[in-house]
Length: 244
Image (cartoon, rainbow, N blue to C red; front, side, top):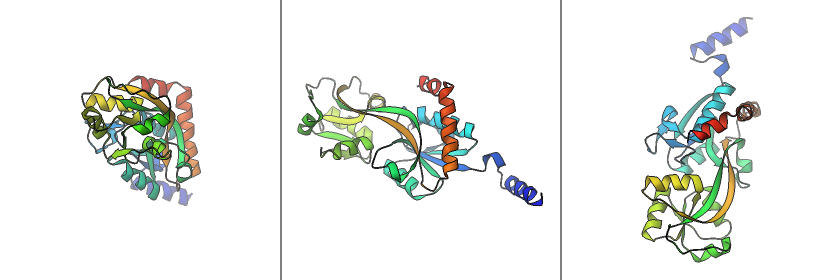
């Protein structure tokens, strides 16, 4: 009885409730409409991080009674590496690829993402197969799973630190094709004043997940997964997606 009373006092002294003793820092980047900063900046935290995946994970953490802090930073490789290295960290929205499978523990899917090749709206490029893309200059986001998808097939990709650079390169004729996601690519292009991109090939549909550091307890992973599953069954995820 004394020990229980001591633990309760200690938790309250540290500003924690027993129900919220578990905590996570969830890292992300600008990948609209899934995750983005309110002002379009490359750093944001908590309420200034928005988007489909961000809102879903807020709801998941609330349902699971886990204290989750959301932080958006640039570039992707930085937050990816921090999640690999540091206990108590997670990363979203993350494609669950074979290469990454054993590097993280996973919660999801939280959303789905269509990987595509875009050309300018007036482009005459037509692809009969992905092999035909080898003839063209392709731009992609450095460290991104979609870029890696092409590189793994020995298809050359010019990488950029910001995906907005690929929009400008496409408009200036410095690349012929841009590997991106249908949803996020169109959103980023509109922000750069570019409309009516031409989709020349759909590459893949990827489910997006929350990737957690391997030291995350299985109990915590299951608690988050159960919360996500219950919210999906209630229709809450579709309601969140509809806002965007």
